[in-house]
Image (cartoon, rainbow, N blue to C red; front, side):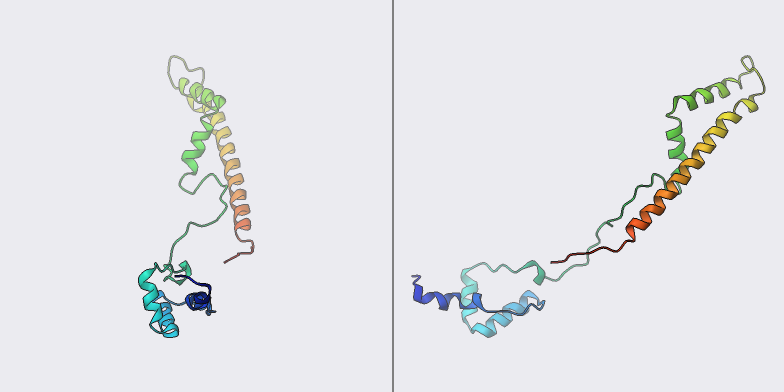
Amino acid sequence: MLRIENLPKLAGPFLQTVSMERKSPAAMSQQLELDQGGMAKDLAKNRKVVMPSWTEVEEIKSYSRNNVRTNKYTFLSFIPKNLFEQLHRFANVYFIFLGALNFVPIVNAFQPEISIIPIIFVMSVTAVKDLWEDQRRRKSDKQVNNRLCDVFDR
């Protein structure tokens, strides 16, 4: 039976001050056995032992990086993504259609090669502008990701 006079004897193993060194669970139980004699073995049989997570052997885990990335394109995806975005504009599709229609001999109004120069020029200037903006985003992201910050650990 639990009586108030038996409480210090029962709570003794749990009220001891322990050092904050990181030890393996086996080393902790061995130290407990040395400190308490055979009493720790008897207590361990009747209860579940829960060890804190910091006592277990820590595995090396690879976490995803915590980087800011706002750029749209990579080296390989620039041309396909940029063409995809530019072909969503109705004006670009319209002028490409007119240039392609000018290659049909019955419909052509003037030399077919000249008809595609304006749309190629406009799409090229837009692609260079998009590339410039993306490089500035990449540079800004690099500055943000390389800033010093405070890291709090438990």
